[in-house]
Image (cartoon, rainbow over the protein chains, first blue to last red):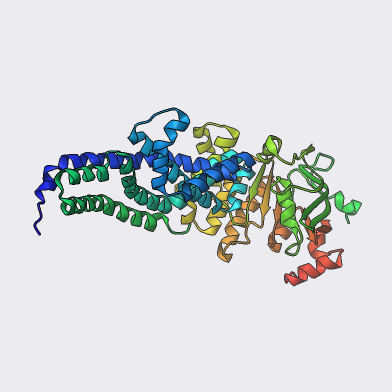
Length: 219
Length: 260
């Protein structure tokens, strides 16, 4: 068996374009799913039954349906149901955001619940409103506490962005698949793809370890 | 419970009490923890609430600023009824400072920021003014050099002194202390009691739940003894500690090894 690694080098431009899209998707999804997760958590603990029910339904739907199915549904059903058509990139971003928001919502809810009640009481004793106590005292502590979990979610998300290749979003997996189809060099391209994901992912995983070490300990 | 001669010894005679409780009832489920408590805290007074664990002292204190909602009776601040919740309650709370047993400083904020946050967010005063006020208060509790430290970098006694400064920053009419030294190492109890004593000498109205009998004996103007959700005796410290009128008071004090 002979290898032709030149194939990878000759197509490096296409692969790097894919990397750019992968990074964009991961960053944009997190930028939506962090506020989205906080919003879901706030809705669930609001004590307002309608809001809480909506947030629960959302969370349980998108946490328990395979992500790839959410991507297909966003691609095929969303335009029909909403009457709007979005590009594959935006559609993929929506699907990823729905999924990660659901996870982040649970993460933030657990983080908020872990802050002891007496912290809110100290805020109330100063005369703060429930919203001020939440925003100024509880949420910052909760975010700090769930940072390691958010970091793990980020790592999963970074790899899961590959799933949107099924709707032809030009991220790394899709770019690699096209190179593979044009050159028939399956092993070389798959190996290159794995290497690129690993090179990108490993420093992030190390960073997560560091975050765990730095902030993961109890107060 | 209180004879006329004892009453006449109290401070601020004839003025509206800063805090007044009448027939306060509090239940937790089927358990009645306050069975109709009536008492007063007068301007400039240091009132100590003592009694065995579970007697309702802390609950009464927590009802005072609405952290616990009462099930009967009423609590007045300067003659105004304490609302059970909402904006009205918040307006009353900012007039009362509270110090917790476990300090409850905000761990993500420095000592200075802990003292600054109340005045800025609740009273709406400018940040510069709040920082100036907080700096002066940290100096007052002897922690000028700790302004930039986070609570986790401070000893228990230092944390509690920051908590006192945080409460004072709201310029309250009355300070509520909920067993402020119970969670402290013995060697840091003194520094917190010293700060409280100085506050008392400056004329701050204080309601203190405490097991520090020596402090109550020396610093308080009025001592209230609670047992099983009721006040069993109250009077000036000389009476409570030297000549208790109620057998249960005597018994409680002797359990603590108080020999007068």
